[in-house]
Length: 231
Image 1 (cartoon, one colour):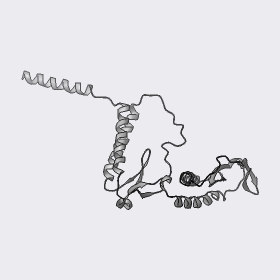
Image 2 (cartoon, rainbow, N blue to C red):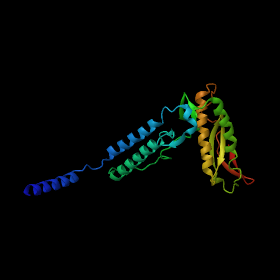
Image 3 (cartoon, rainbow, N blue to C red):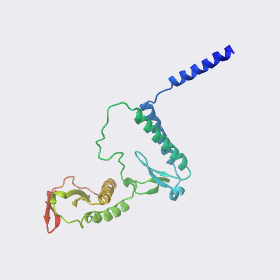
Image 4 (cartoon, rainbow, N blue to C red):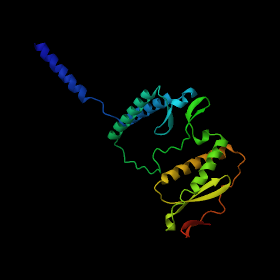
């Protein structure tokens, strides 16, 4: 009986010792583990056959777009959920200085142009993945939509209108914009246009355009109820 009592207290002491020595969460370790989970998730999306193209969906991760196929979607979702949990735990134990994010857009990603079969593999295409004819077609479609997007807004105060510069081949184009309920739609078109234009200049070696605009826009005036750019 005496031996049993000693055994009981030994086990009890061991339990308290184990609990008391339990390792505390470490910010760096948790962040590293979370990043590893994300890398594993991204790895699942690589090397997809083009035969799987139609069954894929696009998912947005912290820094990239990936094609997700039903064959591994459950495992993919599990890894992403585990990464999110680890990041949340890491934030709870973070003891460093407060970091203020001054970037214009957190976790910014450029626009994508759908899921494509590129070099025999499934990929979420960027502007740089497109061929020049498609780039030109998309630019030609976007520009008139952008230039007329705010035509239905009357001008009552020129100070509320602004000028956005764009390029059409070697020509500098100024487009007027102001606040509007669906302004994000214009912003998305402008973002696509700029990325497509940059991709075009990389591909089209015949373009030899000046970098400087010799006749930049100076401001906006009010004329017959409509905004007008002055040069």
